Amino acid sequence: LTDTDLADRKQYNVASEDTIDVFKALPYYFSGYDFDDLPIIVIEIGHWDVFGLSEVQDKLESELERFEDVFYGCLERISNSSVVNIDGDETKVDEFVLIIDFDDFNLKMMSTSASSRLMLKFWKRFKKYDNAVAYGFYINLNAIS
Image (cartoon, rainbow, N blue to C red; front, top):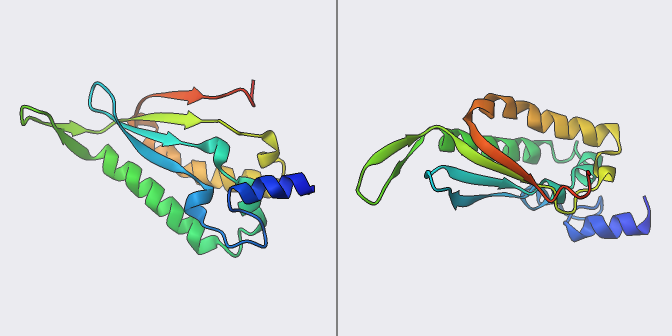
């Protein structure tokens, strides 16, 4: 790794000598609702430091499992929830909107087999929610195009 790579990784609180907050290193959030009252989830994949986390994955195994449980627990609750509109009518919500933000994504993040395995391990569980994604967008794809 170059000094620039380490400086970039420290920006996201992930470097081997730093204390790592997995939830800061893998940002996602609930953004609100669309016009059909579907919840919107944004995953800032470009800010995920999979490379840095993969270097210390053994030390963070329980934190990574907790992150996955919280993330997929969030999707599970959203996929089995309801919304009450202004008239008081309740509607079952079994779908959500997914926005994957590639801002700051760099293919170097996936340059090792360990980082690729970590990313694939995480997304493997997402298959369960394929049918729950009503629609989605990839944004800020400049790094990939």
